[in-house]
Amino acid sequence: MFEDLLTVKEAADLTGLHQDTLRKWAWQRRVRSFKVSSVLRFKRSDLDALIVERPAETSLKGG
Image (cartoon, rainbow, N blue to C red; front, side):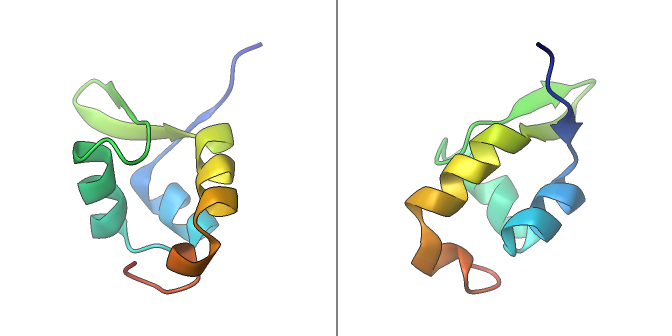
């Protein structure tokens, strides 16, 4: 029912994207994110969907 929320570093490791790219995409709302006590978090399922939707972009570090 509840899904663990990943840190920016964990999300970057999972997707192969740079942490700054994930922060930028979250700010641009290209990927869904959450603020927990002013810290950015991502759902694994949202990142899995991102990898499926953008395989060419996520294959390059820094996107």
